[in-house]
Amino acid sequence: MANPFKEMQKGIVVNEVVETPTIKTLTIRLLNSEMKASPGQFNMVYVFGVGEVPISFSNIYNRGDVFEHTIRFVGAVTRAIMKSIRLGSIIGIRGPYGIGWPIKEVEGSDIMIVGGGIGFAPLRPVVKYLMRFRQAFGRINILYGARNPNEFLFKYEFESYSQIPNSRFLLSIDAPYPGWQHFVGFVTDLIKFADVDVKNTYVFMCGPEVMMRVGVKKLLERGFSKDKIFLSLERRMRCGSGICGSCQFGHMFVCKDGPVFKFSEIENYLAVEGI
Amino acid sequence: MLYKGNEEDVLKVYESVKSIGIVYGYKKSDNEIKFDFISGASELPLDVTTTQRPGYYRINAGFGFVHSFQSPKNFLYPPRTDIAIVTENLYVEVLENNIKSVVLFGVKPCDLAAIRVFDELFASNFNPYYFNRRRGIAGIVVEECLYPSETCFCGSVGTGPDVTDGFDLAFARIDRDFVLFKVGSSFGKIIVNKLRLERANESDVGVYRKLVEEAKKKTSIGISVEDMQKALSISIPNEHLWRKLSEKCLGCANCNMVCPTCFCTEIVDEIENDRSRRIAQWIGCLSYIYGLVAGGHFRKELYTRYRHFVLHKFLFYPKQTGLLGCVGCGRCIVWCPVGIDIRETIKSVVNEYGEKHG
Image (cartoon, rainbow over the protein chains, first blue to last red):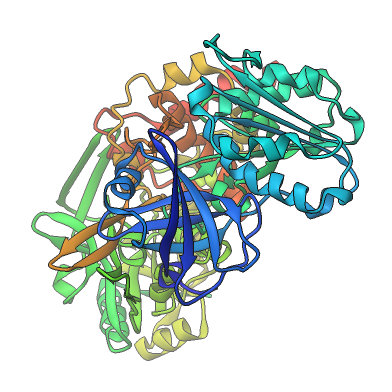
């Protein structure tokens, strides 16, 4: 394997969408290269002189040189992205890294997507994949929760999600909000409304760890199978390739053994706070 | 095969390996012992001894130096490594840090075990910065520890006080005029032949074996690795216990910095004119910022970080490398400002979850 730090590529920001006051989706086109990424993988996104952050793909175009990253501006690097990166800016990209969703392996089954907050971003390429290859899958349920209606990402695509044949697209917000006509409660409360064959359903879930813990509990209560539940975890990643050690989750390196894990393989670790 | 010599021969070995490459090892420097480039025989710590206790380290004139806060990690995986220069238009010049022909001299058996851990760890997570330096090592000379410190527990984790493989030449100082040399490779054999050392006789070997056995006993905490691991794995969800075990911890990460197998790394950018220097520098899992992400903190509570440190050494490293991550050097005990003793932690956990609880 080559030196990962050598592999930084230049990307130009060709589009930006303000999703919420603190979250933007940047469309990035690589300048002189391509990358073959799959849903659930991530890039290390570099801002000159500031540093890198791991950001999952929120959209992967077929061309191989264009993809999207949905970024919340909360830390030093992401704030620098907010301040200095705009349409036409050049940004450093290393990747793709990690193991993504086992999307090709689950063809023929029912699929359930459970996303909480910005955790929906790495699931969006899955939704797009399912839409594109609709015939290859059984029933599709998309459950997406946010704190309040303003916190949802990709609202401009909701119409298309709700039109997927033989599917359910369910939304939730944490607390009542004027004009809200969908569910009020946590996204994990939507699990009981999912219309799938629980024994033959693969679940892809991403959100805060506490949400995923509750989510898994509710899935298991409904009879979903432990080895058909996949979770995408987040950790501090500094290198993206297992060198720096900071993303360790038990003995796993989230950057290279994940970020997507089969629940049955991490069950003992996930059960413990701060492992 | 063991050969007999004296302190003079140790110096001769040093002179002999000096001709092969740059020698790195423990050296006396400004009243402390460092692991660094040794420029001459007078720097070798042959006439000093160390007193090590939990939270306590002193160097005195004497015989039988054990080790210092530094280890071969300081050479193989330095605290700060320049990895790249990036220009404003994102042109990346990678700095490879190649080192050629180095001999590690006088490393301890625990250090050798730590090098093995790094070899395995970084082979599976390919790390060019480690391997560029590792490849440059032309030879390893080990000093076995027949007189271990109070804080040493290599006997418990099977890493010492003697060595059996993975080195070129080892020596054990029984006293100043009585040093036994052990050949570990053809390179080691060449050195021994050059020195014209005699084979040690049966009674010399007997003295050596007896001291090794005594040192092994002294450095054992009386719990098998399997029992430690069993108890630790059951203890994980016991928040109360881990809070208690870590209550003295200051979160200073000294243990991480001195541990010869801790490898966690932060990558920082430092601007120089119109370029940015990317630097890999150590970060410790005990420190408050470790696990901090923009959205929160994955190990916010200090007890979870101390637990991670201990579990990593005993449970996670074996899964990552096939080797125990704790090499029993005791540095974390010695250099902990409040003297937290990992042996006591292990004993407490085994006490709580050991055999008697089934």
